[in-house]
Length: 162
Image (cartoon, rainbow, N blue to C red; front, side, top):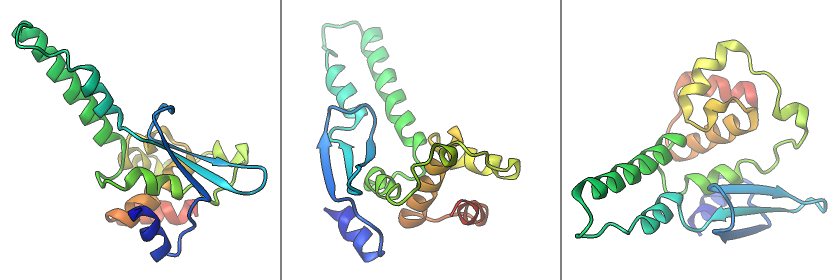
């Protein structure tokens, strides 16, 4: 798995277990267990691909307007997925979940307030980071740093969060 090689090369922690499944809603999830091991759950089939498959009711005998509605809906789902993450890299979701390893599980940390000066920065990182959850912002920034490039403002925010 490319993501494990990349994480290992960067000296990053990798999960004890990785499970690919279509039984989760969303792209991925890190589970931390009471025995201090962890498992990353990954969506085996991206939502847009599942949507496309379900929308394959597009038939020549359908009206052109109906087929157009299907096309517009599928494009909306694909565009939404792209804007929700800080990179379009194929390893983004996996690396994002790996970046949660080692983060504190304290609820007080998860919902701490980020200074107002950083708000415009994290709202531009990705749709996911714009929700303002510190652990998600940090995971998005670390992922973007590994797979793309951070702006100086993003570097400053990452430094604050770390």
